[in-house]
Length: 231
Image (tube, rainbow, N blue to C red; front, top):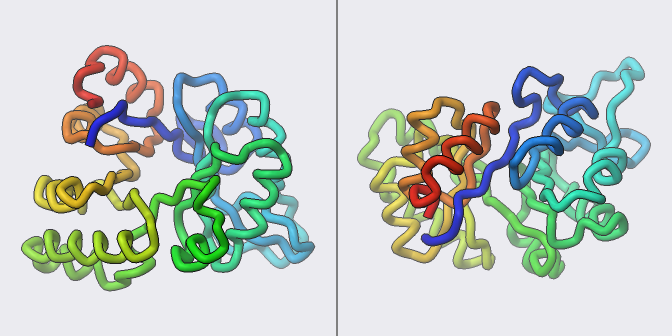
């Protein structure tokens, strides 16, 4: 695949509190393309930020609307990692209402079928998480690395079925064989969570579409120093 490798700041990057306004503000100050937040549905019906299940004790959570409002004036994209099913419509509608249409990326628990049938793919990019469709994938490939190309072919078929162009995977699964199968089928790959400079350079050279990292400044420096590696 061609094009510059994108940088996504993982929630809580560079020592900030995960899913906090402090993280969002810090990420907005960095030379990154997107920032990632974890999204769940609050009992009041509003999407809020939390990686884990919401506490039943009245704990206060940062609303996704506050985050969208904070980034609306920037040019950065927002990667909403959906932590539970059924959030696609709410998140996409909120993004459209606040002027973020075209800058929204969904990962996590995303229904590719719903995204296609609802027409939401027109203004929203999906990095499809492999484990949502092949739940035995990681243990299966860990037990037998020879299964990785077959898994890549399965994911390519799923993406083609639903009109998805990018797969989201843990960086350990993104072997040369895995990337080759997907690239040959016209698909791009987003890898998470890549924090070491040597691994960052490796995936930039491999031409992945996006790298999600807790060290976005390191990745930005690598991309600036080696622009040809991100193509």
